[in-house]
Image (cartoon, rainbow, N blue to C red):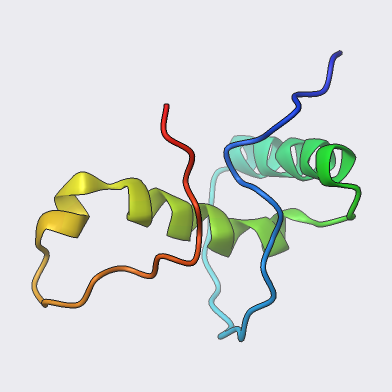
Length: 86
C-alpha cells in the first residue's frame, strides 16, 4: 500500500483539552485506528484515534459552510486547523 504524501488532517497542534466521552460504531473505530496508523507513517509521530478525533471534528466544522454562515451565535469557528481545499 502506498502512503499518501499529505492527509486531509495535517500535523497536530498542541492544545488545551477538555475530556469528552462518546460512543461510535465498531466499524468507525476500526477506520479511526487505521487513519491513526497512516497519520503516524506520514508525519512520523505516533498518535491514536483518541488524539485524532477532536482535530478531525474541528476540521469538519471549519469546512462546514452551513455552520460558518450561521448557527446561533456570531462567533466564528476556530480557525487554527487548516483544512486543505479540494
